[in-house]
Image 1 (cartoon, rainbow, N blue to C red):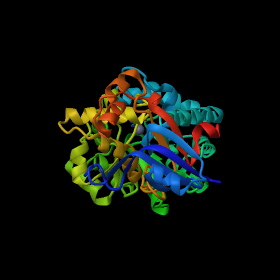
Image 2 (image 1 turned 45 degrees about the horizontal axis):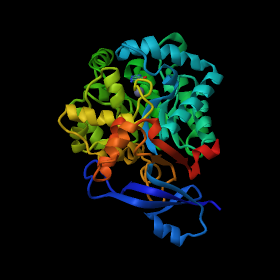
Image 3 (image 1 turned 135 degrees about the horizontal axis):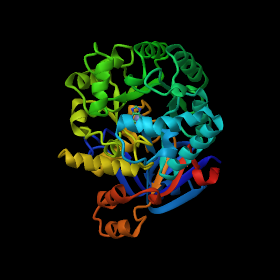
Length: 431
Ligand code: GUN
Ligand code: ZN
């Protein structure tokens, strides 16, 4: 029997909670989720589901909260071992910490080790889908997708392409970036739960020729995603202006080379010009907010509500290892804090939606992942809302689900993750 019934509190969204969190948000204090063959088939009152399916095995989580597994829309698995490296800003941080670590991925065994380690850490934090930059080495992409396949996880990834402004051992060429990326996407895109993302790291580390080659590859494979970085730090933007003197702005360095489109994912997007916001919105592209990274590397304050009102698609991400945590709870807390600094605090429902459905929609996977509803894959996170004494004493006097959940968003970490299910399997049971 492949059916299973999970009982607990349930929280699900039937609409876009970032724009209207009240209309489509459904909480059930005694809910149930029925799973069949890896997918959710029903979500409803737990007692009714139990009565209707008396033969189905049950896991009862009591007061714990069943929600969709978290979706991390931008991270770098090769930076797992150098997370929380001190004191640099973006360009120095890349040169000092990141590039030397990424050079180690010339060894496929090292790539296998870190890919598995990253996914296990992510699962322990309740994250069931991750979108990662790999390294310049094709084997780092194989390592990523193989590790995900072994865990039944839906992940996105791509070979990071760089043909200038990077160390010798981390540079490819326009042609080899095209050829390697094409071979990898032919091998992995759509295999099981794998999705390929064409991955120019960012404009400063690609020549115009390389950006054009990758733009041509995307045009030939428009169902792939494309991921890169955009307008993260002021110094970086000035550097881009110098490298691309004819570009109207940072986004134009991508646009002019065929790298602007609906399936494009633009990480950070903090210091945007009005034209960039208009073009990203017009084409239906997604920007990805990386708040723990933006504070850690000192990048700036993303304008969540301004960009949401402009109609932009927005995902949420750790940006590991620029981000200083593997936890999407920490990412939600930082999103709230940056919202406060901008005078636009987000409601807990908006934060939860962004970390699940919002990120899934940014990846064009809405309804399939990050969603607690019939038809979605059964990728689930079970949150203990009283995981530490400090959180428990606050939750004990909560008047509603939002007061009960917000302390876990603000103060929670992997201790709050009671259990995780991937494709209808309890993670602890598949080990
Ligand atoms: N810009 C280009 N590469 C990177 C990276 O690895 N991390 C971050 N945060 N920004 C980048
Ligand atoms: Zn990044």
